[in-house]
Length: 395
Length: 104
Image (cartoon, rainbow over all chains, first blue to last red; front, side):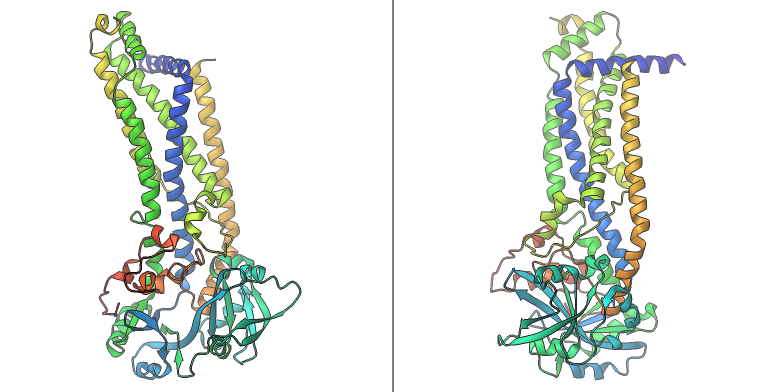
C-alpha cells in the first residue's frame, strides 16, 4: 500500500471515529440531508418516468387536431368545415369526433366520453387488441366500452346495462359491450367509448356539428405545411400538431412547473439551514480538538483532509440513501407521496405503474447541487479554525 | 475491524440494494412492453392525446388540447381553483403562437 493511500485510510478511520463520537448530531444531519436528496431525486425520477411513458405512447396521436374557437373558448365545429379541407393535398383522412366530459353526481367523478365512427380511424383494426369484448358499432344502439376505473366506479355488479343523463335529464340507456384492457389504464381509466350517433344523442348535439376533427396526413414531414394551410383556410380554428401534443408532458412536469418549485424550494431551504449551521463556524469542542491535533503535530492540510473525509462520508451516504429511497419510492410505491399533487381533487385514481428513469446526468446534477456545496460549507470553517495558533484554540 | 472496513460494508450493501432495485426496474420495463403495445393501439385507434393522470378539470385531463382560457373561464376575473393546475406548467404551444399560424 502506498504511503499516500495509507495516510488517507488512517485519516478516514479517524474521521469515522470522530463522526461516531458525535453520532446523534451527525445522524440527524445525515437524515435531513438524505430527505432533501430523496425529495429532489423522487421528483426527477417520477417526472422523467411519466415523460418516458408519454413519449412512447403518444407516438400514435393524430397528426393534426383542429378545434373551433370563439371568444377564447372552444366550441363545436361545423361538419361542413370538412368540405373546405377537401382540396388540401396530402390529407389522408379527416375524422370527426364528439367527445366531452360526463360528471357523475353519485360519486363526483368526471368521465371522458369519446364518440366516433371507429371504422373511419386509420388504425381502427388495432383497437380490438386493447378491448376485452366487442367494440361499439356505428349505429345508435347504446353499445359502449368502459375503462376499468369507470367500470369500478359505476358498481354495475353483474349488470351490463345502465343509464346516463342527457342535458334535459332524460335517461340515455347504455349497454356495456366491452371493457378496456386493464393494462391501458394510463390512457383509458376514465374513458367511455361509444358510437358517434350515441355520443350525439347523449350530449344532445345538433346534427351539423362535432367536437373536433382528427386529421391524418400521408407524409409526416408535411404536418407543419398542412397545418399552416388549414389555419389559413379555417381562420376561426385552432390547429394542434402531433409534435406539439407530444411535447406537452415534457413541459408540464418541467423545472418551471409548480411541482418542481415545491421540491426545489423545500430542498433549498433545508439545505440553506444546514449550510448556515456549518458556515457559521465550528463549536468550541471542535475548535479545541483542532488545536490539540495541531499541538501533537498535525498539519493544516491533515486537518483539512480530515474534515473533507468527514463531510464526504456524511454527504455521500446521505446521497446514496436519498437516491436509493427515491428509486424505491417511485418503483415500488408509484411515487405515492406525490400522488396528491398529481391527482388534486380527482375522484378517479388510475393505477399508475411508473418505472423510474434516471440518467448519469441527473445523478451528477443532484450530486453537484447537494454534496459539493455541503463539502465546501464544511471545509471552509475547518480551514479558518486550523490556521488559528493552537495555543489560542485550546485556551 | 477498522472503521473503514465497516463503512465499506455499508456502502457495498447500499450499492447492492441499488443494483437489486435497478434489476427489478429492468424486469418491469420488459414486462411493460406488452402493455405499451396495447396503449399505443388504443391511442392510435381512438386518436387519444393525453395520459389519464388528473381528471379533476378538463385542462388537466387533456392539457395538450385545452385552450389557454380554460382555467379562468368561469366568470370575469375568475382565478384558477383546481390544485393540479397550480402544480403543472402550461404547455408552450397553448400560450405561444406557432410558426404555422394556428389561432391561439
